[in-house]
Amino acid sequence: MTKKLFIPGPVEVHPEILQAMATPMIGHRMPEYAALHGRVTAGLKKLLVTDSRVFLATSSAFGVMEGAVRNLVGGRCVNFCNGAFSDKWHDVTKRCGKEADAAKVEWGEPITAEVVDRALATGKYDSMTLIHNETSTGVMSPLPEIAAVLRKYPEVVSIIDTVSSMSALNIPVDELGIDCCIFGVQKAFALPPGLAVFTASEKALARARTVEGRGYYFDFLEFEANDAKNNTPSTPCISLIYALDRQLERMFAEGLEQRWARHREMASFVRGWVAERGYGFFAAEPYRSVTLTCAVNSRGTDLASLKKMLAERGYAFDDGYGKIKGKTFRIPHMGDMQRRDLAEFLAVVDGCLGVLSV
Image (cartoon, rainbow, N blue to C red; front, top):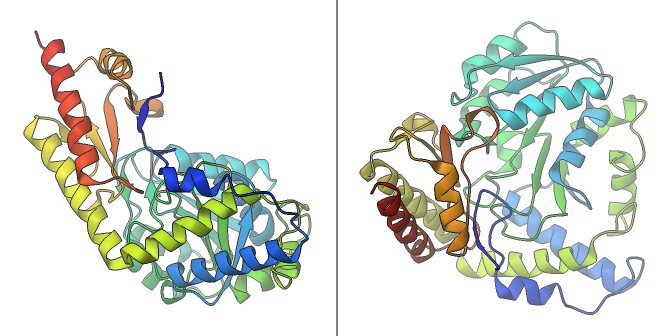
């Protein structure tokens, strides 16, 4: 049985996107690909509100997250950690042989401007990593306030993961001063996984030129050289880039303001359902994600049984991640989802909850 995906990624993919992926193949060194690549990167620059270079990498986002560490950490890095994926990024930084410290807060808490300021004020770091929207906990840290703090430390290269937030709200990369902004496409972009996008400011590229051991596949300078030809260092996932081209068209047709408003409305709808059903929220109100809600299982629902029942009815459901699995559950509201999709899903959940409570 094919299940409708109501998990925090990959999310449901629209038929138009799947159709775009069936576009006849071209060679990645042909002029037809250069035209496609140039069109997509121009659209991404418009979406990200940036004049920085925008690169396409055939990998999950974590490929570029590792690549950014290898390219941009020259001395010591501070990894801001408040969930499973930010904790993992710290581990990856150390596995790359970089000197790094974890600035940790409890899962469910945001990384605040004060936390960032306190770490960078030590003068120990030339780079930092931050996950804007921690998918494991549904916490969205206050990026504009953090960006204001980063301006005090121009020697620090900022590496920001927007994997589950980019395109769901306004994240103007240049205005915020982000040196390297990274995201995948299987969450708010609602594409199949396998393509990562990242930016590189002039400051980031200058740092990369001073760092040895960058490797090849994610060498920012290789991407820079090939970008001049509207191309990539290695063979790209052309079908996914066709899909991204179509999705950008659809985003701009909807209108970015309307897209951001739709995500806010869906978030409000899901939060209302969670509260009305007597569940709690893992994140405090100012820091709740716009793209997924992490609910606390305060009713003691048998989430494993709920997940199984929903699967039998054709829906994929998430019963928490990592050390909070079973204690929380996550409901996505991003990408091409509409409020009616969420209403349909939550009505089925209500029916299952009724059976479980008998």
